[in-house]
Length: 159
Length: 293
Image 1 (tube, each protein chain N blue to C red):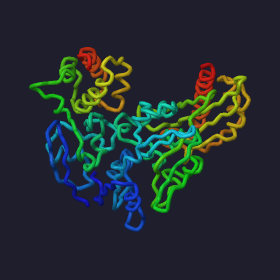
Image 2 (cartoon, one colour; image 1 turned 135 degrees about the vertical axis):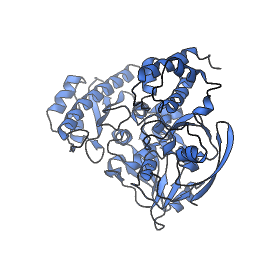
Image 3 (spheres, rainbow over the protein chains, first blue to last red; image 1 turned 90 degrees about the vertical axis):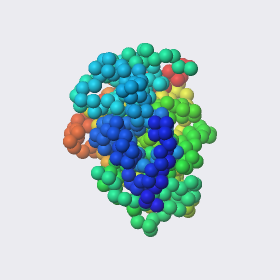
Image 4 (cartoon, rainbow over the protein chains, first blue to last red; image 1 turned 180 degrees about the vertical axis):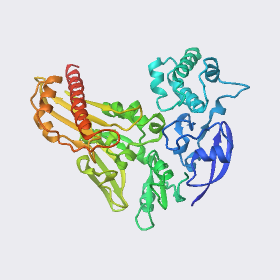
């Protein structure tokens, strides 16, 4: 089969789409479902701008074939929070001025979110390693690390 | 650029997958984690007519331990290696090498079998499997065969896998007492392939001297490379950076790196020596720590 019917969860909502098998999750999200908060950068899995969470783990949506989304739980930045109800990590990015052009921000925040889930009290060097795969061409890394560290410190204890 | 359209199959069993992978119906490619194949599809470096997605094959996610051998299913992800999940913690070398692979997103989806079958000469896991004297387990409708890691990597992106065969697992001997391992690599940027990576496994005798050393390098030729001559020359030496350096500096390395945009052949030679000494030093230190426990 070359044409697939794919059912998955996007930011908590059930979605059903029809897509050719060679389409990537990135293009399904942006072009078919209008989730333009997912940015297309290099298209080769290097830059991190198209990061989404697949069952809670960060992946490059440009390196996931559409069929792989079947039955899975996909979260984009909008699933974390929006302008009306931002997540504390998103608020920290605003507070610390951690966005310049903003293109890397969605991927940066989702990568940081998944990382903080496991390591809320991470050191700055651990945070730098955690976001090493997300490129900011404005090179505004210092404030990004500030924002992630602050959000981690203020996170309520888990459990 | 979108990939060239292909037919997409998601077999539910290994037997079904092997049937689909039989040559004859055009260019058929197995898909594991997709972190090498999907970029090749979208860059149109690969134009298969059929993609056989293996992700439903839970039987290729098994990890077993039997008689001192750790058997890791081909679909076990780099993240699981990195975290040392379950029995994988019996191989500290994998735990040390896996975080060096790509970025966290690559490690979330990328698999050990995918990396080994892709056979990039600068990749970490092929050198790790060579240094551990691992064995590759290969299946086809005709049955199972095994290939030692020394013979598996044939050329750039080329392995001993024949058309219609699938890599299903890798077997790695678990290190015993007085044995230690380490990996050292140099890359230009975080997440890049290594310019050179050195993997060392050292066994010490009761007097603390090297009983056996194994060294495998990545990034120094068309395949990962074991340094058999250097390994022989290391037997009997008292482990230290100085003695290791003396052994390696006093002999030509058995590698033939090429110059490319990333590094000259001479620089790769230099890195190979420096990183091998560092890896040997840490492997020996891990081996002596093991002995005192």
